[in-house]
Length: 164
Image 1 (cartoon, rainbow, N blue to C red):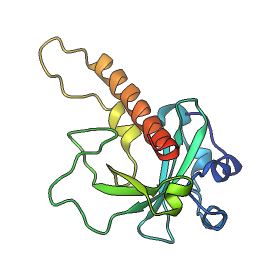
Image 2 (image 1 turned 90 degrees about the vertical axis):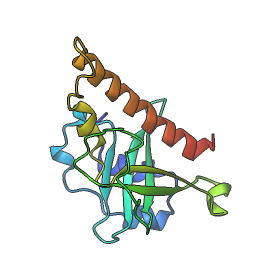
Image 3 (image 1 turned 90 degrees about the horizontal axis):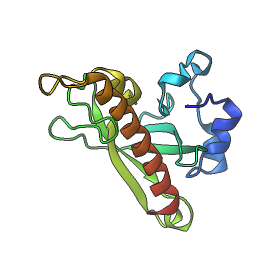
């Protein structure tokens, strides 16, 4: 992922009002981020327990900022993250929803998916997957998982903006 600054992040939000963008609490760790090991930037809002933000690279590479809301109900059983699909998750997965862009969003339309509660997907896909069989190429599988994560987050950003 390309390095992001506060101004790039604030200008990237597509489903937030000007007030929401102004009031958004940005992460204080931007200077310490290893951008080459990150496929998207995600963080929880310290002021609002059920609000979070993600900045996703779109299919054309432009950053798309999204305000997310955590569902009130938790999954009944251990859920799998739709983005990293890690089966050995040490972390919680919750349902996040995002208001659609434009008229659809003003009418209340949302898009939702199961994502790691604290957005650890980039780290999860870089862990070696368990070998499925003798001779399994673990390094190739790790690269494939990283590519799949990048496509999924870009697809989510595209779906939110275009409605497809």
